[in-house]
Length: 633
Image (cartoon, rainbow, N blue to C red; front, side, top):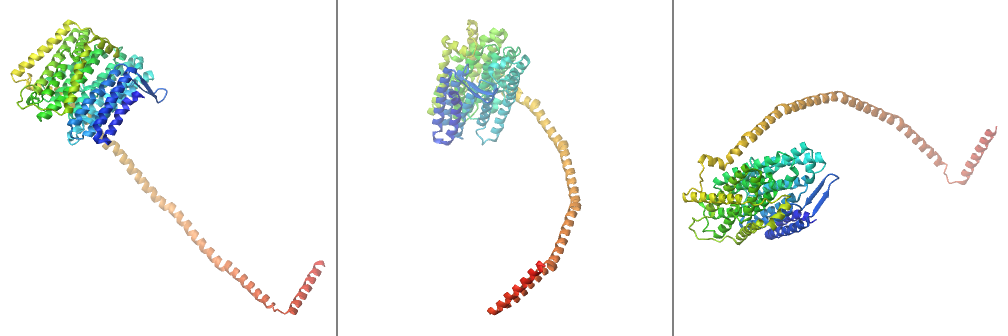
C-alpha cells in the first residue's frame, strides 16, 4: 500500500489544494515532503505491489533498481519548485501549485512501474499533465498551440511504446519488464524499436528536439520540473531500466549512441548561440540527455543514471535562476542582463549550477561526465573524442549563460529576492554541491548496483582531457567577453539563425511530415465528400423515393380496405338499430301492456268481501277437480 501512496498522495493533495486555496502551498509542500520520506522507506524495503486484473493482466509497481533513487529524487526536486511557484507566479497560482503536485504523482507511477502496461498508464498521465502545465497561461492563444505541438510530438513517440507493449505481450503472454528478453528475436527487435522511439521523443532527442522550445511558453516552474526530473527525464529513465533486457538486439546500442551523440552536438551548438535564457537551457537539456543516451549505448547505465540525477539538480536550479533574471530585467534577452550586482546571491547560486553543467570537479556532475567519457573511450576512441567535443560545448554555453545573465555590468544596487525564491534556489544549489559525494567509492559503487552496471575507473588521460576542455571553453568565453561578442557568438549570422531554429528541423518536419499529412487529410476529406458521402446521399434519395411510392400504394389499397370495412360496419349498425326499434322493442312493449292489463283485471277481484272469496275458492276447487278428472281419464 505504501507504493500506491507515492502515487495517490500527491494526486489527492493536488485536488485538496484547489479546495483550500489559502493553504495550497502548505498542503503541497507537506505532501511532497511526505512523499519523499515514503519513497525513502519504500526504496529501503524494496517493496513490490501487484493488482491483478486477470490471469495475464496485472498492474505491478516496485521500488527496485534505479526506481529506488527516482522515487525520492522526483518529490525532492519538486519541493523547491513549488515554493518558488507560490512566491513568484501571479496567474492561477493555486491551480499551478496543485497541478505541479499532482504531476509528481503521475511521475511516481511511471518510475515504479514494473511492467509495460503500468508504464503506459504513467506515461500517458505524465504527457497529459505536461500539456496542461505548458498551456497554463490560457490568456495567450498561442500557448495552447505550443502546448499541442509539444504534446503531439511526444505522442508520436508514444505510439512506439504501444507497439512495444503489444508485441511483447503477443510474444511472451506478459507485460513484465523481466519477460521482455524472452520475446522471439524478430519480435524483440520490434519491441526495442518501439521503446527507443518513445524514449527519444520524450527526452527531446533529434529529430524531436524542437518541441522543447514550444514548451518554453509554460511558466518557469513548469520548465524547471519538466526538464529536470519528470517529463524529459522519462525517456532516459526508460532506457536505463530496459537496456539490459535489449542487449541481444545488435543494432540497438549503436543507434542509441548515434541519436544521443547527434543530439548532444546539435543541442550544444544551439545552446551556444541562443540569446533566450530558457531556450538556451532547453537546448542544453537535449544535449545533456543526449550524453545519457551515449552512455547507455556504450554500456554504462551507471554513468547515465548518475548524469540524470546530477542534471535534475543543476538544471532545475538554472531554470529558476533564469526565471528570476528575466523577471528582474523585465526582458528575455540575455544580451541585456548582466545582473550579478543586482542579484548577487542568486548569481552565486547560478554559478554553482553553471559549474555543474560545465562539469568542474569535484562537483557530482563532473563525476557523471567523467563516467560518460570513460565509457565512450572504452567503446571507441572516435566516440570518446566526439563526447569530448560535446563536453567542451557544454562548458562553453554554461559559462556563457552565467556571464550574460549574472556577470558584472549592471550599475544598479543589489536587490534581495523573496525569501522563498532564495531558499528554493539555495536548496537546489546545496543539492548540487552535495552530489560531490559521487566521487567517493562507497557512494558510487552502490549506484552501480542499482542500475545493474559497473563504474568505469577514472583514468588520468581522460581526466586531463576533461579539464583541458574546461580550460579551452573558459578561455574562449573570456575572449568573446573582451571583444563584446559573447551575446552573438562566433558563428556566421546565417548559421546562428539556423541554429536557433534547430537547423530547420521544425520547418522540415512541417514540409516532410505535417504538410503531406495535411494534404492527404484534405484529399481524403474531398474523396469522402465527393464519393462516399455522394453514394450515401444517393442511397438516401432512392430510399426516400421508394418510401413515398409505398406510401401512395398503401393509401390506395390498405385505406380502401379500411374504408370498406368501415362502411359495412356502419350499414350493419343501421340495420341492427332498425330491427331493434321495430322488433325487439315493440315485442317487449306488447308483453308489458298485456301484463299491465292482467294486473288491472286481477286487482278487480280484490273486493274485500269474504263471500266473494269463498265463491272464487269454490270455483278454483271445481276447476282443479275437473283437471284431475281429465288427467286420470
